[in-house]
Structure formats: C-alpha cells, structure tokens
Amino acid sequence: MSNTIKITYKGETYAIPYQVMKSSRKTCSISLDINANLLFRVPLDTDHETIAELAREKSRWIIKHYQKALAEVKNRPVSNLSSVQRVALELKYKDAAHSYIPKRTAFYQRLTGGTYQRVCIRDQKTRWGSCSSKGTLSFNWRLILAPSDVLDYVIVHELCHLTHMNHSPEFWAAVEAVCPDYRTSRKWLKDHGKELVI
Image (cartoon, rainbow, N blue to C red; front, side, top):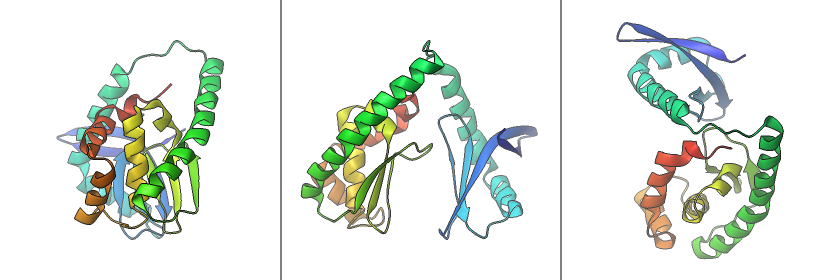
C-alpha cells in the first residue's frame, strides 16, 4: 500500500499517495508521476518533518498539478488487454527499446560530442532520461512508444548534458544545433507523455 500525505488547500484536505527518493543531491524537488503519485526527491539526511513542511509550502502547486494529473488519469483510454497480454506487450516494447535506443544514441553522439560510458533502459516513473556525472545515460523504455522525433530529442538532450551538466543557454544552443525543432518535441512530451502507457 502506498503512503499518503495529507495536504490542506482552500479548506479542503487531500490524501495524496507519495514516495520519497533520497540521494546525494543538495536540493529538494517535487513531481507527479503518470498515476498522480507525488514524488519527493530530497537529500539523504532529510526527515519526514522537512518533507511535510515542503508539502505545506508548495500546497498550491501540488494541488493544482494533482487535480490535473487526476483528470488525465480519468480521461486516459482504458485498455481492454488482459494482464497477461499487457505484460507480454510491455516485454516486446522493452526489448525494442533495449535494441533501438543505444543505436540511436551512438548515432547522435557523433553530432553532439561528449563521451558516455553506457546506456541504460529503465522503467522510470517521472523521468524520460538522465545523464550521470560518470557518463551513464538512462532512458525510459516508454519513449519507444513516442513519435521518433520526440525520442530523438530526449536522446540529444541527455547527450548534450555530457558537455553541459546544466540547462544553460549554451546547453539549449547545443540541443538546437542538432534538433532545430526541439521545442515542438518538448511540448509534445509535456502534453502527451502521460499517454505513453499500455
């Protein structure tokens, strides 16, 4: 059973499922996954009271995006696949992602520069890709369900982090040099990313 956190906003109390992800990061962040679950990314020494205080401070943002996420879940097309069919289909797409994404990454690395150590395909809940300081590139397998230009944008985005570990103007200029229409792909992912489910 998921943990829930109670957040009161405009006199109404919401019990929202949440998870806490602790790491060596120095800052805190909040996001919502495709199923309207809250995710707190916090430093290793963060206690429950700090998380609760963060939730109170960001209550307006949380409730606004939680209600939007709930509406998206409610309006999401209902699959008539059986659980066995869904698992089989996911395995098929995951295999495709493991085969295709590393090849596409190698192709674009020749254009972006930088050096990566390996490519990982993961089942991330709130992220489409990431680039570690050690040169590990990670991609969400669900990107294989997205339009090809959207998948390419995410790959280029993470490759550019090999030389720009930030979102500076120089970083975005490097992305645009390879993906001139990256803003369109970025918007598509923001608008439709939560639909990439089986």
